[in-house]
Length: 245
Image (cartoon, rainbow, N blue to C red; front, side, top):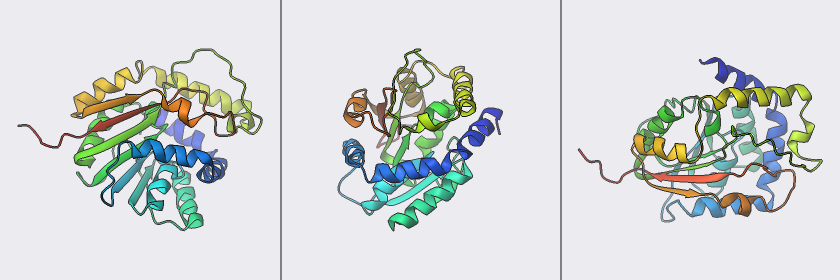
């Protein structure tokens, strides 16, 4: 495993419990409805879906689908995240499967999912192009990848005042320093996003690629504990319904 992935795992292992508690609160917050509204723009409405939450953390997106009766699976490279995802599902009384697995190289059956979702993952992947190709293979023809992310590695130097109950307010100087170091290292792998992603997605075989840079204004209307100061975007990319020779 690449050293940067080991470093990312070690960082997030230290944050899993607090992360789980915050995501549980978010599932009870108005933002849950807002996330569902964004997802509903791209997913089929006429059937039960097989959904994979990539880099699921404690399973936030998987829980949204499981609560609607869909077949939800989540994978994450951090073992403690998967432990807490299973615990979250138990607390909420939802059925979902969670597996420790590298999202860049998912060991799952090809063409076994209607929808792939991911939130704040792809900026952490040092091999994003190969990940998009692997994800394309996981989708059924006509399936959709919905990627919520931001250009986190493009540091602007802007200082944004966060509310006192914000998660980053509770991080130690050591943890903040490690987060910044990981971000700096990952920046060497990336170009400007989401434009860079579009090229990678096309190379992977996706078409009908939709970019939405307005989602940040709709989700984060309040500066509360869930507030993300980075302007997130949505990338929705569809697998071709017919394979050309």
